[in-house]
Image 1 (cartoon, one colour):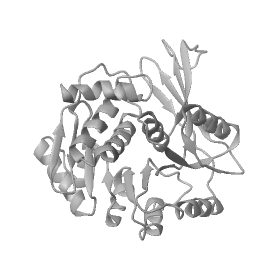
Image 2 (tube, rainbow, N blue to C red):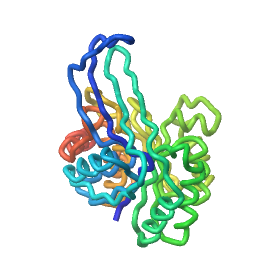
Image 3 (cartoon, rainbow, N blue to C red):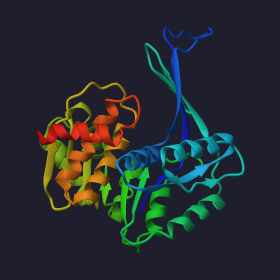
Length: 302
């Protein structure tokens, strides 16, 4: 079974506001509400690709219940812990001449709620996949990902970490199955402006020497690179298409890689599916459907 954790999920309220002006009443021309959060995005795309999974995390209030209802409609299983105070945050994303985002704070997560999460995680079985994605709320210790991996170190799990900075690097001693920095984040970690494929591969190898089994580097419009645990480098340019929305494309790449790996156990194929899923989401207003991913994948097979 595949599990994802989203510590601070959200309802993303996306509004188009032509001619947005501060200090006056503005009116939207289009609006929609989506279930948000990196782990939730991974869960959604995995489901779209035909892989059952379960989204874990914390919800609260009427917005939390709405979030669960939206996931139910998408066919995504969830097992959230309900907090007694606060409400699941709302992130407002204003699409105008200059895009603006206002992200909510989210509810406080208590020690008791964390204990409930650990209990759920301790029930995971060998060969399960666990995805730790996104930032940690400031009400929790920055060591939360490490705390989870320490608890689960005796289980034969494949743990995927999609985070930045020390939140990522601190987990490497636990030998995660996959990490997914982008090329800019990778450069920040190694303290170097990475300009060539050779430099990116060398930086990825540094993270691998620190413990990561597989390093997947997303490179935006330049595609992606994978340094696999058998010390091979796989590199593909980005598929051709019209980019309309990059939100969730990195999460989609993670989901696609997991799906591809589970399908064939082949890292080259996993990278192709991952890049196809990330690109398909970028080519769509919403997260990629299975059909959209397969359409993009055909570019690699032609």
